[in-house]
Length: 263
Ligand code: T3D
Image (cartoon, rainbow, N blue to C red; front, side):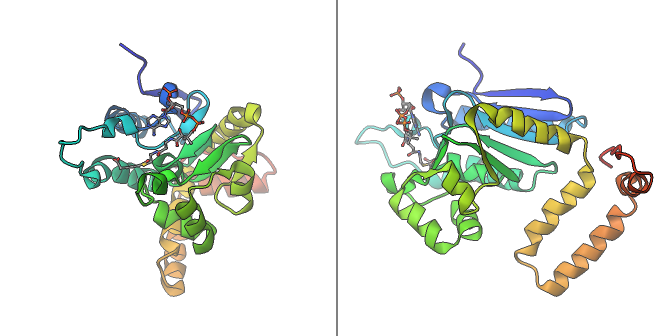
């Protein structure tokens, strides 16, 4: 039996998910999708986990759909690609975007096609300086998926989104940071140390507050200002009753570091 397509390591409140098909730049097979869904189930079930990191094994992050799975003979009927999106990519993107914990994509190398776009559903993207992002879809006659047509114009504007999608030109990590596609670019050999340090910081942080930050920012794009102000009021009312808010304010007044419980 070969290596598992997904590795899951849990330590110090941080779940580290590694896409583990380095020989094919961690491109998605149906097997890998299923293993990833199971890993995320395990992460959500483990109440000791308070932050999630996703990275890739080897020199790539993820090259999108494994195109070997799309090989067919001339007489075979065309595949229904909508079915794969319904079954795997769309649930993955929805799940990560609304994941109840802070999520970090540690983009260690090339991220192409759905591999570039599913990463955008994480909360923070760190990329190694040598990493690049490629909207590879147009090279094979497709249009971006895994949320690309939603995330890209919102993050970097229509002009850059169209440029990347139509040309399929690689976008280097430094440029991705400059135009606001990702949070930070870091040196290749420092990537995992930096990411794990922040993930551990999140794992010791006010998890309920983090959840509200994610939910409210997600709603902010569609809400009116009035609706958003009401939402912020309701959130503060709820968070004001948490242990972590009491602890945060008490610690500030006592001039000490807060000890958050995540509730
Ligand atoms: O189909 C559906 O269900 C619809 C959903 C679609 C979602 C999508 O993601 S569509 C887009 C699919 N992805 C691509 O088109 C990207 C294809 N890959 C590339 O263009 C290049 O590999 C990269 C630009 C990502 C990296 O180039 P490079 O030169 O650094 O590496 P390489 O030599 O091309 O790849 C290394 C190996 O990985 C190689 O295998 P080999 O020759 O050493 O045995 C290559 O075939 C394999 N590999 C890379 N990407 C894929 C792949 N194998 C299968 N599927 C891949 N997507």
